[in-house]
Length: 80
Image (tube, rainbow, N blue to C red; front, side, top):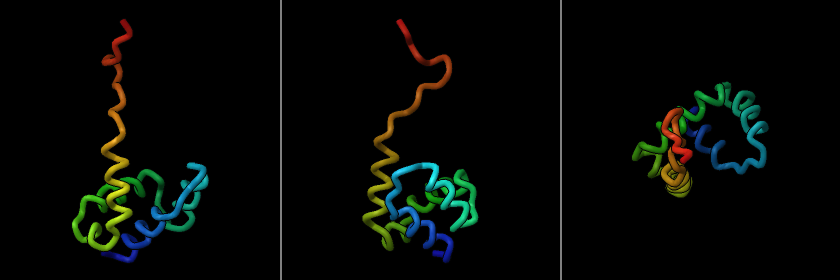
C-alpha cells in the first residue's frame, strides 16, 4: 500500500458528524476532491492487502456499501 492509501484508510477510520466538514478535510488533508476520495476508497476496500491491514474498517465499509438499497432511476419509480 502507498502512503496515500494508508492515509485514506486512516482518514476514513475517523468518525464524522457533518458531511461538509469531512469534505473540507478531504481537500485540506489529502489534497483530493471528495469524488476522487470515494472512488479511491471504494477501490481500496475491494483489495485483499487492504483487508489484511485494516480488517475491521474494511468489513464495516463493505457492509455499509452492500446494505444501501439501489436508488430508483428516472422512469422506474411506480407511483400507482
